[in-house]
Length: 290
Image 1 (cartoon, rainbow, N blue to C red):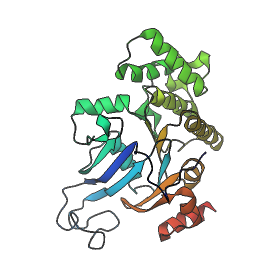
Image 2: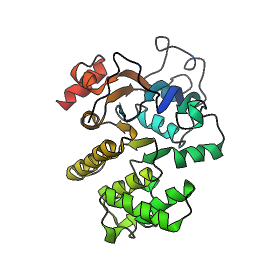
Image 3: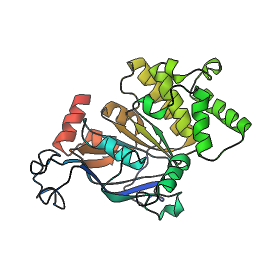
C-alpha cells in the first residue's frame, strides 16, 4: 500500500477533521474540567473528587483521501469512544468534526439535528463493529442487510438494490447460495464480511473499523485483514481503524495515533511510530510486538 508522506507539503483537504473531541461520564467538577494535562488531578482517566470518567479528552486529528489512519491503545484508552462519537452512537461533551463531502466541510456534524446525523450515517459513513450484533440484523438475510443500508440512503429501485447487494457480497466472498441466509447462521468471519459489504453499500468517503478482528480465529483474522487491504487498494476509500493490536496497525495503516487514558499521547507515520517511538507507553507497545 502506498504510504502518504506529510513532511514537506500541505496535503489535500481532509476527508474528516476532528477538533478537541471530549467525552466524560459523570458530572465533572473544577478539579477535572478545564485543566491542563500538567494541572490535572486525574488518576489515569478517573477523577477521585467527583468520580467522573474521562473517556476521551481533547482528541484532534484528520483523515486524508485514500489514507488509513489507525488509533491504537489498550482497553479503556478512549479509542472506541472516539469511533462511537463519530458514528453518533455516543454524544461528545465538547469538540467538533467536519466531513469534506457534507456541506463542503463547513458544518460541525456534532451540532446538527438528529435527522441530519442520520443522513451522514446513511450517505457519508460506513461502520464495521467489533460485535456483529450491533452492525447487522441477525434475522434479516445477508442481502437484506445490505439492502437496508441502501434504502436508508434513499435508493428505492428493488432491482438496483439487489444488483448492488449481490456485487458487494461477491466482493467480500459471500457465496451466492448463502446470500439469502441469516447472518445468525454465519461464522464470525462471514458476519464481519457481510458488515463490510453493508458499510460499503453507499460508497462512503470514510469507513470506520472498530476492532474488526477481535474474537476471530487467527486464520479468519488474516482473511478479514486481506479483504480490508484489498478494498482500500481497489476503492481508495479512507479508513479510520481502531485496534489494540499494533500488528494490525502495522499491516494496514499509513499514520497512527496512540491513546492512553483518553488522550492522544503520540502520533505520526506508522513506520516512524514503530521504528522510533518517543513515549514510554508506545515503546512498551512496540516492544510487545517484537
